[in-house]
Image 1 (cartoon, rainbow, N blue to C red):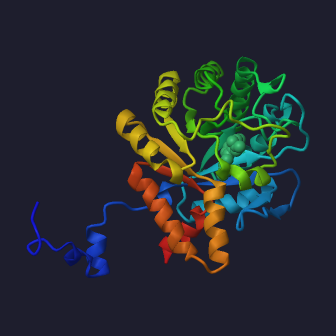
Image 2 (cartoon, protein in one colour):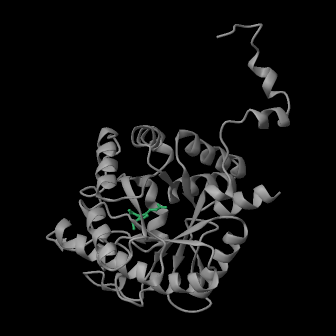
Length: 325
Ligand code: PBG
């Protein structure tokens, strides 16, 4: 290692062209996945109060947003659905004309180049807001897994390219892989939310997706924020069951987990820069306390630097527009 004054790190920071040449990490539109929220109806666009810049939209409006994303060079969207009616078993999640299925069909027809990823979880579809079938006051793992598999097949039938189970039930990746293969969808990929933590940072999302649990919380399914070794076990387990890509969620408070999963598995790693992480920056920027564009860039580049290959972020279009200049 050369020493000062032979080595002066500031030499390479003297101008933007020089900084650009030695820049180790870049985030571009092509690294990003834009989440979208589908609601029933036509011409509906309802802003989500806690997430400025994010709307719940009917399928026609959602197609518009997705087309704009594709035009900006964003390769994929991740669909969430808010159904017309909810029940204890989340039936509308796996019906053929479920809201995500409708949105997927419309996107495949109207924005064919865009990858469609779908969230597979029952919490938006159950009247109690939990991620599966309840047994007393907890989600029954083994009764829920087959429903998740049905939901994934319904999404694949509608044309989803990637299904993303976010429920954290044990064994769901294997069941989904088997169900997809059995139904003739061997090329539908699985992006598994492998290390999904029981996080306070999902707060605003539960407004956006109308999925707050009616009682209790998700700590019996989602991971304890204190655990990283366990995240590795979760990732390996999902990979062994057939996950094509693994996810860490949230992102910023778990950069070490992103790094370790990437280094130790070598598998494609996705990070979800979640609603609360987005809302904190947007809210502080609104008050003039922080430069929102720069803070968002810094957050996203740190997630890539940690080892993520791709990032799910509500800021995808803004970043893509900034790259267009
Ligand atoms: C569950 C799901 C959640 C998020 C994505 N999928 C909420 C939860 O687990 O409570 C959170 C995403 C975000 O906060 O942006 N369907």
